[in-house]
Image 1 (tube, one colour):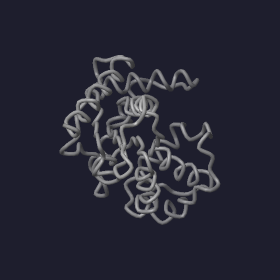
Image 2 (tube, rainbow, N blue to C red):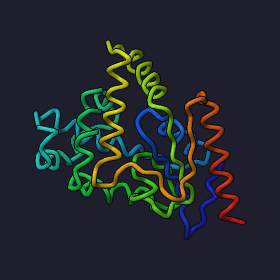
Image 3 (cartoon, rainbow, N blue to C red):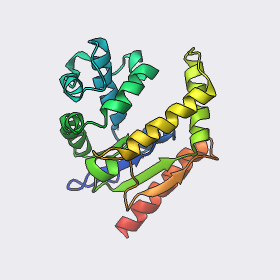
Image 4 (cartoon, helix red, strand yellow):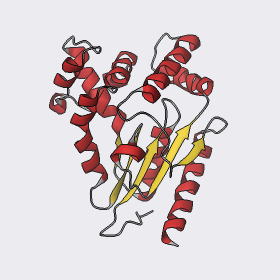
Amino acid sequence: MTSPATTDTPFVIAVDGPAASGKGTIARALADHYGLPHMDTGLLYRAVALNLFRFGGDPGNELEAVRACDLSVISFDDDELRSEIVGSYASRISAYPAVRAHLLERQRSFAAQAGGAVLDGRDIGTVIAPDATAKLFVTAAPEVRATRRLAELIKRGMNVHYDEVLADIHARDERDSGRDAAPLVQADDALLLDTSDMDVDQAIAAALALVEARLAAVTR
C-alpha cells in the first residue's frame, strides 16, 4: 500500500514500547505495508554500546559513552549488535542526556524525510516525532515479554534461563521509565496496543487497524 503522505506533510508512524513488546516486528510490518522506510532507533544505541564494548569502555561513565558515539565504524548488519552484553550496555548508556543528544538529530532527520517514515523506540512519540501522524504504544506483560526474549535467545544458541531474562526485563523497564532524559512513557495521543494475548499476525493486524483508524480520524 502506498503512503498517504502529502507533499507538505510526511506520513510518520511512531511506535514506542518496552523491550520485547513486539514493537520492532510491528514497526517493520507497518513500514512494509505503507511502503515507508523504517528505523529501529534502538540499534543506534546498540551501535554506540558496541563501540564502547569493543574499546573496553565503561558503560557507567558518560564521557566514555559519548566518545563511542561515532557510528562510522559500525555496520548495522553486525550480528553482535543483537548480543545480550551489547543490549545491556545500550540500556545503561541510553540514560545519558549527552548520548541521546548526539543521536537526536539523526533520528529527527529520518522522521522528517519526504514521504514519511516509521520509527520504533522508547521516545519516538514524545521526543523524536511528537507530531507523528499516528502513534502506537506497544506493550505486554513482563512475563510474556520474558518468554518471547527467552525463545529468541535460545534460537541464537544462547544458554539462558527464564528467571534471568525476566529479571533483565524488569531492570530495563525500570531504567527506561525512570531515567531523567526522555523516559519511556506513553504519549498522550498514542494508541495503546497490548500484545500479551496476541500472536505476531494478530498483533500486526491490530496495529494496522489502529493506524487506519487514526488516519480516518485526521482526514475526516
